[in-house]
Length: 33
Image (cartoon, rainbow, N blue to C red; front, top):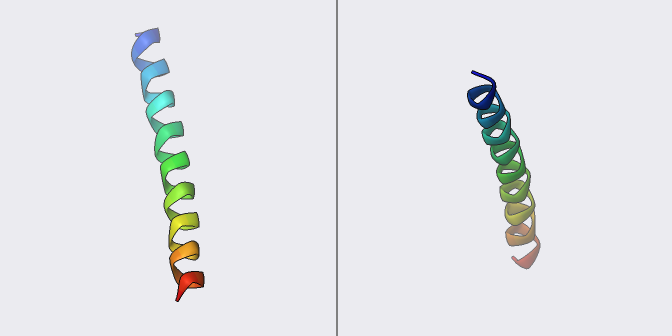
């Protein structure tokens, strides 16, 4: 049970980081134009 909770936390963190990264990527794209 503990491992599953830990995995979910890790997945949530990865998702958050990915969203932040995508936001930055979009901002860079906008700047290029």
